[in-house]
Image: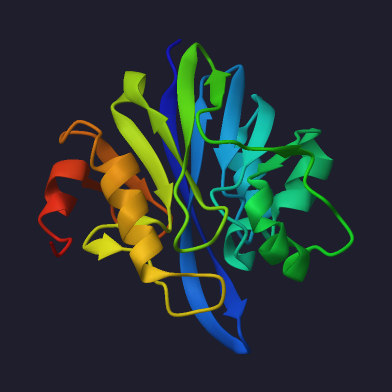
Amino acid sequence: MAAVVRNVVTSGVFTLDGGSWDVDNNVWIVGDDAEVLVIDAAHDAAAIAEAVGEAAVRAIVCTHAHNDHVNAAPELARSTGAPILLHPADRVLWDLTHPDRAPDGELADGQRLTIAGTELTVLHTPGHAPGAVCLHAPGLGTVFTGDTLFHGGPGATGRSYSDYPTIVRSIREKLFTLPDDTVVRTGHGESTTIGAEKANLPA
């Protein structure tokens, strides 16, 4: 069976800089009936585990460490035995949510993860968060962008550890070089394409 992409939407609260917001998060499961990667274990470990089913979780990959993207990661790791992978530049955010539990491994720009015969390349895309990454799966014609790129434009940069010029540079240099028909699977909300989003970013 070839790798497929499944989506679970979980709900919870995003907190940062003393504020809190109710959010719905996209959790992406990539793989087949035997093995999967979980991208962004948000809010509800039990719901994610139910969606995974009998497949072995090979890794829990964090696109960044805002609490709403990682708050269920340790519980899911305990129940599945999967390692949690995070770019080291986002430890400052991770430690706000999980000060007593470090990630198990690091992500790096250009690193390749393979699941069910499908390769995903890690793209370091800082701006929304210093260690934000996207995961490009050319064999699936898709890129998982976390909160770096949404339907309608770049992710938010109005809070601590974020920077608008940096996220724009990441999008232009790392994402807009991908084929226009690449499906953008986001951390929140609906999917889009690289071609569509080129029209939404000011020159």
